[in-house]
Image 1 (cartoon, rainbow, N blue to C red):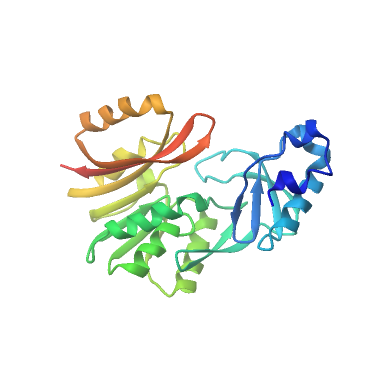
Image 2 (cartoon, rainbow, N blue to C red):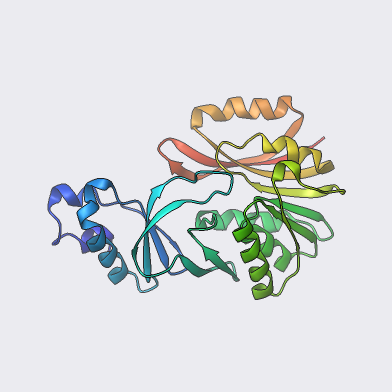
Length: 262
């Protein structure tokens, strides 16, 4: 039963029309964007959501976008007493603190796709690694040397915890991606880049071996994509593949570009 159906006899039609059609579930926590017009009904909505989903125990209301380089969102805890959970994805487990780190289950397909691209023996860097969803899935499936880089100390702490939880080893560097202290080059770099931070691609290029590959995630409106592709090519990148990874806001989508360095 949909959330709107569950609320059908509890809200008037003018309120029911405002109830979001979608929400995201990470572990046992649901994240939903309840408009201010439903402020008085937010607890009723949360209770209806939990009653219809046995896998959900807590409900967070998204109140703002990620506000800084840490990519820490703004949330209101409506139901349940915590923002921490354990999320399962592609046979891996992840400790996540939704209020203290960035995590999106919407990239599960992409994480599986990147695993298939990685070759044994590569030196791999995951920039903006967060709690390790890309990094750990790569390491569990490929014999590589892999390093995670993030500026968020909470994310790095949880990454170390998740490495132990999944029985894998990796380097963890707490630093700004713009001034990362590496003395070696990498064969492959994965970049789930924050919104508006495309300029970090230049920093990645400086860390990449000739012929290496960057999996670069960015946010664009449809009409911007052709121009962006030309910018990449003008900078010397060869675009091997790109795809739309889904909507993130009105008329804005996340895209991935697989780029090879000349």
